[in-house]
Length: 444
Image (cartoon, rainbow, N blue to C red; front, side, top):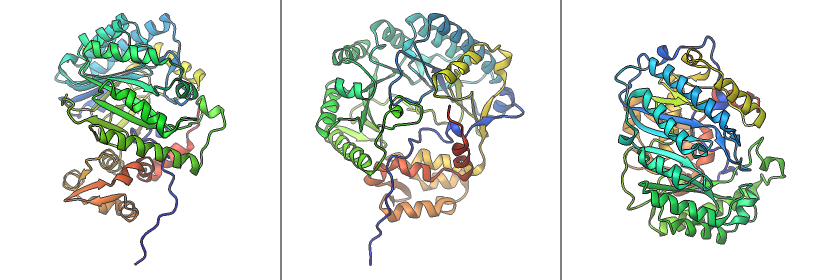
């Protein structure tokens, strides 16, 4: 019998951190009120995400919604608008609403001053009356903004996880990724995080940078391991439209794919040999790291309340947000619109997508099967009254034939090679409707 040899599959097609992607969102007409969207939603275990769209620099690989070098006047006006939005959202939620997990992202939340960070906590807690000291809370930071005074605010207000975007400990690699930083400043920031005694430290690293070798990548991992981070994320470098690196002549071919795959495998194996377990293609957790509760900082759950002009909100029937852009001028226009809104303006959803039964099934499969622990077939049956193969048999069989998916005692689980190809598996589950909407999106 001839073994199945798949045609070439590009391993790095798209990082699926949320489905559907915001480029599939469109203006909602008529605009639904938040009160109607949340009227029948469970609200006893909400996830909260607060978006701060400011950074000190824009990294060459970054396509996030963020503005560089915001003035104190703009950050002040942004926080005022955030407060007005929180008031509108609070009015739409029930009095019994409670937050179960929270995250502050961006951008770089720690771009704000310590006093401004305290204001963000006050605004966030005003939504449901929850004390963020009592729930898992993740905050993103950069080495240049992870200063003792800011970290003190985060620790005092209950931050349980601090994610530091280091990307590389090699200054020449950081420069190649248009992320200029000195090694001494990175180490100073990491020491400050440990001194602040925030329970969990995550360090982000990137592989595939121009000039990076297996040796230098392992050296960066070893430099991170000196700080015994509870988590490490290994991200493949992507060159996306409208980013700094896209203005150069990027390698987007099989040679670069092969190099990134090699670096991924070297990094993965090195972490597994040094006391970490693999949770997904990107995420590795130290085996003795404390359990801090639900780790929903990936912002994937229904019952997600988003604050800020780049934040998503998820109900069971509608995912919604504000407009999205990458270009600096377009981003500033969206922020200017946000800070000019009244409380009443915030009582309606602007852009989004309706979640059909088919989209819910795809999202559940994406959220579950791309995790190393796999997806419970029985759980899927209970949620959707059918086996996953009834809905997605063609895709799942293709993955099985490639050797990327196995059936393990009623668990659909990716093999080691399947995890390596997560960024190509995810897009195969996108619906035709979402794929067409993303293709039609006008980049700006």
